[in-house]
Image 1 (tube, rainbow, N blue to C red):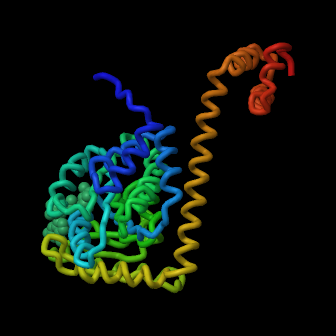
Image 2 (cartoon, protein in one colour; image 1 turned 120 degrees about the horizontal axis):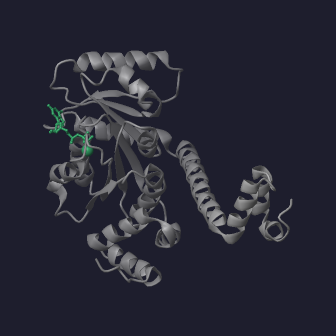
Amino acid sequence: MAPVKASPALRVPELFREAEQGSQLALGRLVSLVEQGGSPAAEVSSICASRASSAYVIGMTGAPGAGKSTLVSRLIAEARAQSERVAVLAIDPTSPLTGGAMLGDRVRMQDHVLDSGVFVRSMATRGHLGGLALAVPQVVRLLDAMGFGKVIVETVGVGQVEVEVASHTDTVVVVVTPGWGDAVQAHKAGLLEVADIFVVNKADRPGADATRRDLEAMLDLGSPIDWRPPVLMSVGITGEGVPEIWKSILDHRDFLDGERLAERRSIRLEEELRRLVREMLDARAQEIMASPAGASLLSQVAAGTVDPWGAARRLLDGRESDAADTGQS
Ligand SMILES: Nc1nc2c(ncn2[C@@H]2O[C@H](COP(=O)(O)OP(=O)(O)OP(=O)(O)O)[C@@H](O)[C@H]2O)c(=O)[nH]1
Ligand SMILES: [Mg+2]
């Protein structure tokens, strides 16, 4: 395959303009650039920074197959009924267990494919979860800059990063089901702490009431908080209970309004910044180790003339050239 020779410096503003004019293709390309990271991603980030931030971000997480995408598709309809533009990011873990999620999401959300007020995108982790945690907040900012009033992030609620990605949102909806859904499982996956709203989906199946009671009991055990997550019931395939979920999301938004929301977002930004700094330092470490000075100090460490701690300090202090000259610390 021939390499793509587009100059990112020229391409990004152009794609941005096209996306703003409603091109979903251009928007999709911008999302891909963010996913790939590097300087095009940084350029997208810098263009987005100047745009007002008004999107409300909703996280949906829960066990594989709990009905998250089915519910998301129905929530899109709720938002559209209020003329709100909605974007959905579905994180596909590309695991053998849920390998079909991408196709599945497309099928489940196909009611909305012809609606220009809806943008649905699956993002694959490609085994690099760190990259995902970096890319998602930036893609959310991009969608915000494009004027989507609501952004929904769907992740499977297994694994620390997936849970974190969905929980770094304004309102976190945790979907459980009867059977899987006993509160203990949710608790083990770390979902209890992050939930603002619980949904017991597949309430058409036996055991839904017991699951609801279990969750309420677990919530009773927790320390008193000013927002107690409601436990709602739904049937994704019929849409039963979905308006109540949407209403509950809006209630939670009203509850956060102002200071609480600002605080929540600021914690999120701090975490994102820390992650970015870590990523850049790691890249810098690789560079230093691959440099001639790195190689020289490595051979001195191997020869026993410099100790590893001293060598690392000298590489970081930029005194690697003296080391290369003298071979002594
Ligand atoms: N019986 C029943 N089935 C449902 C309900 N909601 C969704 N399903 C079915 O459950 C299956 C999984 O639904 P999805 O919406 O793909 O679930 P998901 O949580 O997005 O799945 P992953 O993204 O793969 O983790 C599909 O076959 C749905 O039709 C429900 O309320 N009751
Ligand atoms: Mg799904």
